[in-house]
Image 1 (cartoon, rainbow, N blue to C red):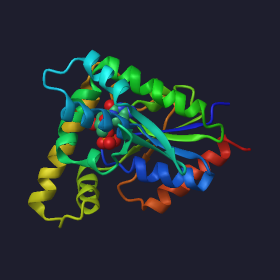
Image 2 (cartoon, helix red, strand yellow):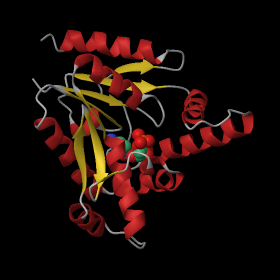
Image 3 (cartoon, protein in one colour):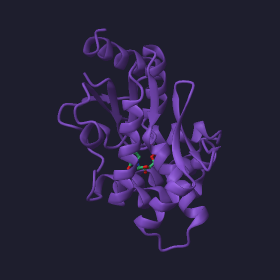
Length: 225
Ligand code: DC
């Protein structure tokens, strides 16, 4: 049986924090596919002049290289041998990542990297993103679609970045998140949407502990050994 748990959902719905904690509880690895799209975007905006083509982006990815490295139990993106976990969260990457992620050849490349990672890690991998249950691992025995209200997601994102949460900031951040969700959900290739057999989890009023508890309980049912 494929040992993958797919967690999909909109931006800032808590996929990565939930995925990381679930993986730790199960002694599986965690892979945040958005981090790989972000790493490719970082490399692209730093090294290529617009207009970018799929061919140039992928040649750059192979040459630098952009890759996933297992650090502890987390697959982390690396660009030219450097860990980029902080740089990929910057605003300039966030603004461009949906455009890079909408390119079909880029998605094929990222999907292959995810499948390689899973094939190399027999214990199991919790993978989070937008199309994990629908496209990348349609046979995953457990698929979660994690949502939360735009307001709650904006609040979490601001708090995570250490910003004070005031009404104006909250409105701006919810608008930015809504725009990115719209771009991700309406693109022609692998749009954000729940798989037919996904378990929907609305985390608006759940604590992280409760979300993790529910996913781990489902995992123990679906992966008995
Ligand atoms: O989860 P995140 O915000 O770090 O993801 C960054 C972007 O990457 C997001 O705007 C959409 C894209 N993405 C995607 O298209 N497919 C995935 N499986 C993961 C992320």
